[in-house]
Amino acid sequence: MTDAFTSLLAALDITESAVRTTEDIFVAPSIWTPLGRVFGGQVLAQSLVAASRTIEGDRPAHSMHGYFLRPGDANQPITFSVDRIHDGRSFSTRRTQAYQNGVPILSMIASFQTDDPGLDHQIGMPEGIPDPESLPTTADVIGALDHPVARSWAHERPFDVRHISQPVYLQADESRAAHQAVWVRAVSRLPDDPVLHRAALAYASDYSILEAVFRRHGLTWMTPGMKVASLDHAMWWHRPGRADEWVLYTQESPSATGGRGLALGRMFSQDGTLLASIAQEGTIRVPGV
Image 1 (tube, rainbow, N blue to C red):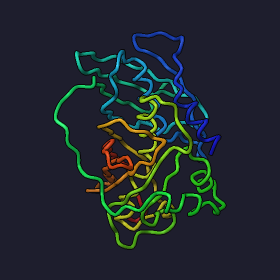
Image 2 (cartoon, one colour):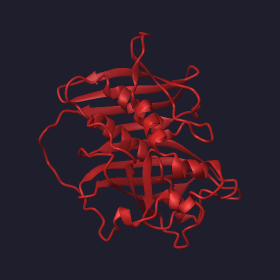
Image 3 (cartoon, helix red, strand yellow):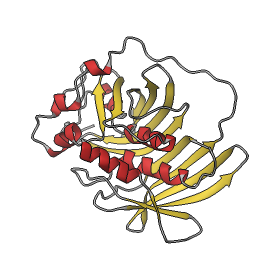
């Protein structure tokens, strides 16, 4: 866990490149994965940090919209180009392109805003949610399996992820519910940097959101022949929060069609504050369907 957390911090420590173009250029390492592909949450988080490095003054990110274009190679670093599209009185807009081998693997636009007064309300946190400390860890559920992905998810993630209902790693949800919730937090204390905490929440938001689609159709991560890939990912940060404290991540799937599944999510701090909303569409292809 210590190595995974150290790798997370290193990946989010974006380095400004000496190369100069009409855009700002940054470079960052990738985090190892057992299948050799860059984890989508990683490149989302890094793209956000790169864009944030070009923002002057106190303008935190309030939204981002990203498209996954190609699978990334986890054995290679990633180059990020940031286009300073617009700086207004209250809002700034940035486009970040993540590159490997000269071609983009992700394209993202993010918006940043000054802390302005205005209307304020939020949806309530779900009731009756068990305490995270009372739930089994991923290591408790699949840590004993002799499989590289199971070992990685159980012991080599920088986040502790705890499902409130039976996880769909190995066992399908017989109720066919199109929703689930998990508790998530970083395994160690993060620096007191709001940009880093927003990026870390973006990283964690990609772990389990499509599982809501799996549940609805009786699928598991081990379904034979199933192919899963994220297509796009959007996130809105509503209020500041810490990624190294427990966050309740609720997820639901309103639709699946054409080999694509849509999932929506919300993140709440443990005291019920709505931190963020998430939307992701992914391809989920099952043999014979």
